[in-house]
Image (cartoon, rainbow, N blue to C red; front, side):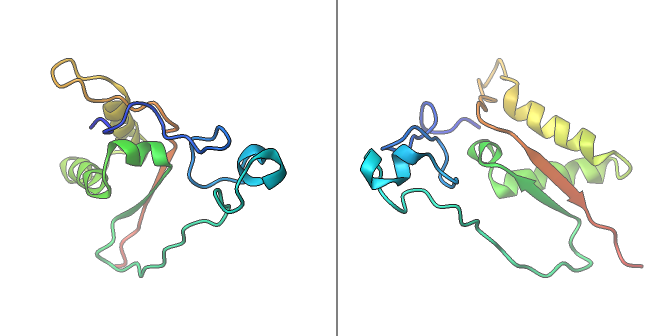
Length: 127
C-alpha cells in the first residue's frame, strides 16, 4: 500500500526523516537554530502478556509500518503459517518485504523506500 504523501516527512530545523532519534545538532540545540524536545531518544515501550494464543511477535522499523498496518502484517504472516506451518520465518519475512518493495504492475503498490528492517519472533507453544 502506498503512503499518502510523496517522500519522507522531514524534521525542521534539521534534516532528519525520523520521529525518534539521538538527533542531529541542527534540530535539537537552540544555538544552532534547533528546538529542544523536537527529537527525543526515548523509545515507545509496550508491555503485554504472552499466552498460548500468541504465535509470533513482529519487530519492525517505521518503513515497514509506512506501507502495512499492524493488522495487515499479522494477517500476512498468519496466512503463511497456516498454509505451511513448517515454513521458515525468514522466508515469510522475505516474502512480506518483497511485497512491499516490489512494484505491482497492475496496482502500482509496493513503493517502500525507507528502512525495512524487521524481525519475526516465533513463539513456542506450551504443551
